[in-house]
Image (cartoon, rainbow, N blue to C red; front, side):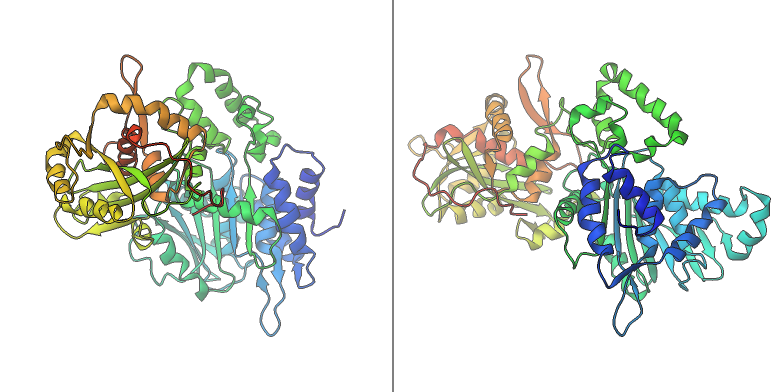
Length: 561
């Protein structure tokens, strides 16, 4: 085996020699994300810098584990030679996804102390710890502060006080004039912070990138700038972490000499592996160390009790195993099946093609979802658009990339106190110029009001000879639920955008006393479901659509987003 640096070599030995349980992503990271980089003639490892940095361990009440020392070596010691310029760190972005209990906060503490220390050696290298809540973000600030205030050994008191000063919400590296400080998703005035490193704690909770973008834009001002994500997986789908996981898969698939992102992804690979504590090491490598015996016993007890606590099962898989699933008792579909709907249409949409529509217009001052559903055999293709009232009281608190979707043309903000029924009707009128809309399903709540507007374009619920508006009743949704469930399982839906995935993941199945299925919201206020309910309304009209077998097939299985 080629020798690069002792801490890097140790981890390669453990993984490639199968001396520790690991997932495929760990081997891919070594084969395609690390070794090709270390073999480059313009890359070198600064072993002395790594050794000095790791000497800071004596100030902590714990020692770093092999996966942490390996990662520290990659972060702090791998450099790129540059002609006519100072050598640069090779990896400017680090992405860690690992199971709950692995000691991520302890690793954050160690990194932060190193970055503001003389061993790192960069003046003014400020470190921002980002989290969604102050209590969550403050954990590491308090921990590092306590190391300074209450040394693990009194012999270290003088040297710690000479180099660092602990305050309430920050720790200062005095010799480097560098600060480790608290930042949250609610913190204002993020501009001009002259950040050297941004550390994201629990990124799975992030749905909006606005604050992240502001901080990232300031990173170029500082030498050796870094972004570091250390997170478990979670239940929020369609957010920042899901987007990054898609990128991670591409990065790990093959070596790209332009890539400067390091991936360290830990997870179980099959759902059944949750039953075996030794397999959960794949998600939490710290469990392989004897010092984590208490956590190991705790997780083993959770496994034993799982048959009696089924409500904990989705949380266990998402957090302990980094293998998120939807709650089988609640979810409309699993996320992996929902995201399949974003693939390109499975048949081409041509002028004059027949389709059915659906609209969800429950509140005039909120969201309004509109959709067309086309069918060929058992396959469905959708066209979706959403209108959003600018005065919606919920809008400021919705953690979804609304402005991004506006730019992509997925939705439109209506700058008025409410959305007039003429707005969604006009969208259908424009679509009717291209397609043959045979029926539109609408909810009974705004039935009469919407129908008046639809009549203006020739769609009427009460025209016996040419009825084109269908009142969707609960019994219709119950009947359509079987077809909806089947469509997800068969991956028979295509053409969706990310907003439709968001809507669907916000929805849940509801069982009535007879065991029939209809749909509701996971959370009644901010989890918008309008697009999914519009699609459900269209599926309630699907029998009005004749079978068509002569549409041309087009390229399948190519992701739109």
